[in-house]
Amino acid sequence: MRQESVEISCRQILREDSSVYSMQWMTLAARHAESVAPPSLLERYLVHVRRFTLSLVRPVRHVGGIDFRFLALRTPLISFYPPQSIEGAATSSLAVQISGGALVQAGGVIRGELSFITEQTSGGIRITILLSDYCPLLLGRSRPGRVRKLFYRLTQALIHRAVTVRFLARLHHELEGPGSAVRVVLIRASADENI
Image 1 (cartoon, one colour):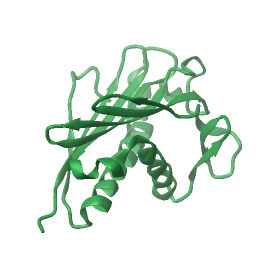
Image 2: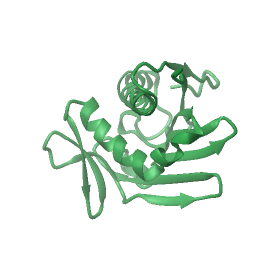
Image 3: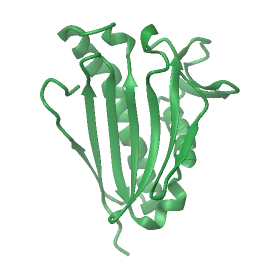
Image 4: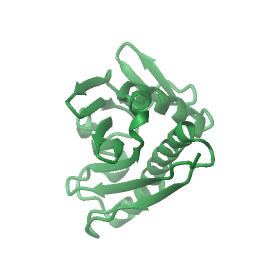
């Protein structure tokens, strides 16, 4: 049986208010729709983050939501409120809103959101991981300079993209087999917006 190949697309944008928009997506065969429901994607993603970082970053669930903690430190890198689901006719999503953390601007609390979205398309089931309105501490309050942008681009932005792309690639390999091909495509916006 021929194994399916997949294209993973990535787009990362730095907005004028120094908030970040980062989206990675791929389309799988429709037969995988039940295996990739948003709650399942979140659970798989939390396991993947710990595995990918060799347990340096540890997602911890608690009554108030989810924390991404560095080793056993009490202060989380990023904290999220409990997940919120939205069901539509062809689209389902689960979002965790940012509630704080050491990597978040104090003024950016409760703005950012990490979403896991599935959408039925003519080509199959599209899976999107979207980080929107995130205000990283590394970028400062507003209109970050070139040095801050470069530092963010080479650290947090790069790590987030690598983690998410690897997650989607791993998911594809789990569903289609380890020999299945994956190709990563960077989607460009205007030069001013790209991270």
